[in-house]
Amino acid sequence: MKITKQLIFLFVVSAFLSFGGEAQNKLPDWALGPFIRPVNQPIISPKNTMLFSPITKDSVRWEKNATFNPAATIKKDSVFILYRAESARGQGIGGHTSRIGLAVSANGIDIIKRDEKPVLFPEEDAQKEMEWPGGCEDPRVAVTGGGKYVIFYTQWNKKTPRLAAATSRDLYHWKKHGSIFKMAYNGKFFDMSTKSASIVTEIKEGKQVIAKINGKYFMYWGEHHIYAATSTDLVDWKPLVDEEGNLTILASPRKGYFDSELTECGPPAVITKDGILLIYNGKNATNHNKSKDYAAGTYSAGQIMFDKKDPTQVLARLDRPFFVPEMDFEKTGQYQDGTVFTEGLVYFHDKWLMYYGAADSRVGVAMFDPNKEKK
Image 1 (cartoon, rainbow, N blue to C red):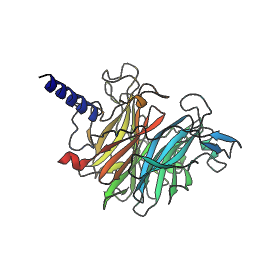
Image 2: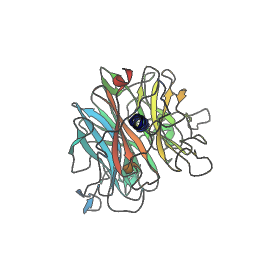
Image 3: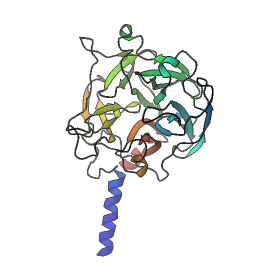
Image 4: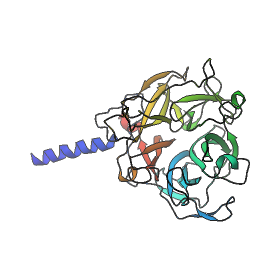
């Protein structure tokens, strides 16, 4: 009897961990998951790598303080991870200079190559005013069917954060295009704080590529609320607005839920058989609006399903997060309230790999095998 009870206990614990701490939170059929963490974690941590800064004209330890908030995409049957790296200079969260580094994995988990230099960073160029001294932050990346990569990142000059775009054919050399909203509505939203762009993608012939909705590229974006925007060229984007010219709000924080303070867009959204699935990052409030089920200030991941024909229409939304901070490295670092901040999602060898920032300090990964779950 003792052995039986022990086995039952181990099974319950295993089930609890497998579902991201949400053992009783069975995901609906439309959602992706459960995402399981591999043993080797974190996959990217800070290093004492040196870089000659073209702006300060001296050497800096560009990824010494933190490596987190990763984007990911596929090239030549390998996963390329573009992660935010903070230098050793500066104080506090957001007080350092951020650059975007590049790492490569053959299996999506183990890193086999990590570039010594960042691939996107502040330089003496046309974007310096927008990117210095805060840098280039929080990338999301996707690729067209023709092999053109586009990265959306936050330009941070320590005054106003702005969503910007850059394009590449090889992931190493990027052409900066500046603010994605600069041209829209005569620059109405150029000086507004803008973050977190999740472009809509689809699976074609086994590959995840950028899609079009009703003839245009479509993205979800936003930190406090979820908004949307369209584009014809991937570079200049037009936010959706109402009759009065205000941004159209598609989803917002919910009092008493895990996302009671922020609903921040995560990795590229994906068209599925049920609609358009968006993974987002929900922050629990620290005031009376917070959920009592999660620690105040915690970042966890949620999912929303939008309609394929009308991508502004919400069809379903998880009431509980599908992925929460559990591991030590997700709770210890710059952000000690606990953070799993999703920014990368790739379809690789018939599985979904989700990349996330942990406690604003390291990079983690989790995997969902839809074929295994169907058996």
